[in-house]
Image 1 (tube, one colour):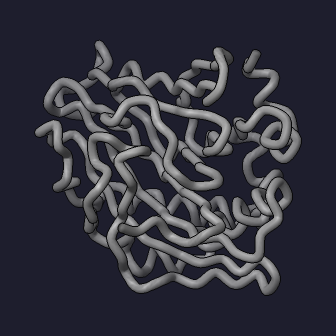
Image 2 (cartoon, one colour; image 1 turned 180 degrees about the horizontal axis):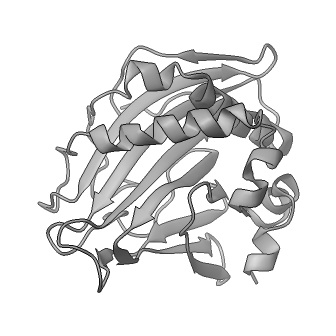
Image 3 (cartoon, one colour; image 1 turned 90 degrees about the horizontal axis):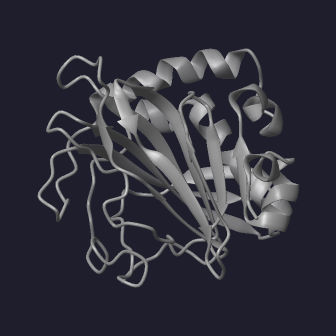
Length: 250
């Protein structure tokens, strides 16, 4: 049975044994071997870029609660080189995303200054090195998604497609900011059994790591907090996917 203690084991051990790991802010930079204090200072500057995300124009449920940007990278593990690819569409098969799968979704790219920032690149590379300890591969094909979910219309849906897998090797959900909302419970379940865990990610730099072959995940809808000013509620995340066999494409 999954529980908070289980997923807070050392991340490589937790991913190998359970298929998921939860990194708390106090352990985040240590586990990813990020350079302190420079990294933290630079990341705080980058976090402001979530205020500049454009609307997601592809929501099939007719909602206007999601903003996002997207970028792709290739990480060569042997040389430690992280290369951004030319901008490309995000595509998933309908087997993994029944709501938004089966067609190319072109999102506005991650701002060049953000994608080139040392703190951004060190973050993506740090996760890639960690995942390579669980599943040794020559390279990772990485997709990065900046998300903002708001409650201006009364409800925001972080995963409108419901409980799902992404069709990759590993997934990271990194909390960037959360304020003025309630709900948004993260749920992770064994893809082949009854075990599961539910919790709310609240603090910035809380990171959920998932072995996408072994678990399914979702986040429940967000609603305005009782004491929040109208339209002020938001949940900002960075979602990263790591795939060894290339980017998903039609």
